[in-house]
Length: 119
Image (spheres, rainbow, N blue to C red):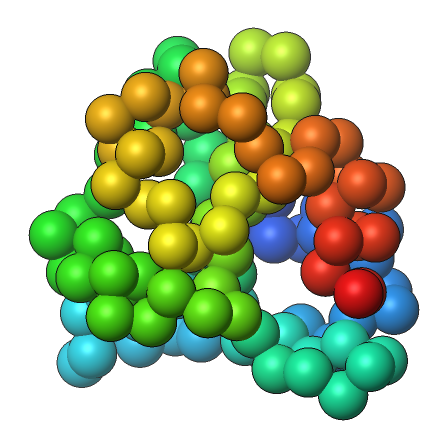
């Protein structure tokens, strides 16, 4: 099991208040990894990223998706060394690609991410 799959399993196990659907999509490049539905009745997408450094890598298709769909999209990043989890709004993908994990997140830590996504 790859690191992104392990990250997804961790999210699914620890954030049970949200309905998660893992999107396995090879035909529509750039589509985020997860479609989610919270108890407030809102759908949103989450792109999962795992990194060993502070740099977060995106394909041109992922950048295009988040640029075209800036609302109700998120990027959740786990740093493998520290285990830290950070959540960023999809509208900030260009800044995240340029600054990496130095960019201020809208939520830090799995519990804070859960609270943000539930709202």
